[in-house]
Image: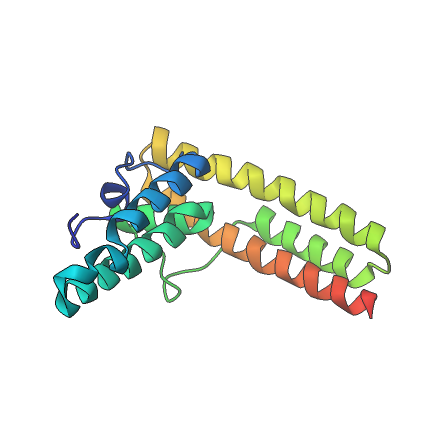
Length: 172
């Protein structure tokens, strides 16, 4: 194992957006077994510290790879197009209009059924956007275009959290 390797190398995965979650999970478990500090107990404290560092590195990589949005952002960064908050965050007009419609629907939602319908719509939009992000990264190799999708997906993720907060408010 190499501390300097990227997450894909560490997990022995192809450097692409499309990944099977089960493969990531299985590789994580395997790496955790290999690096578990208890395996190095007979080798002394220094070896256990190194093993602990490996465990931390493996867990950080796993968190980035298992979640599609984080994986996409990480892949953009590896491809030289980091997603930075200070960069231009302008979004296409159609996307902004969709966000406004969703916000209005959220404000007007008075029951679980309305929230469920909105949540389903947002989930479908997220799936479609993730598919487009994957196409841009894996087929078109256009990290700059993928950055725009990642930014849009970040908006969608925050909105999904707003739906859950609204759901909690209605449940009280």
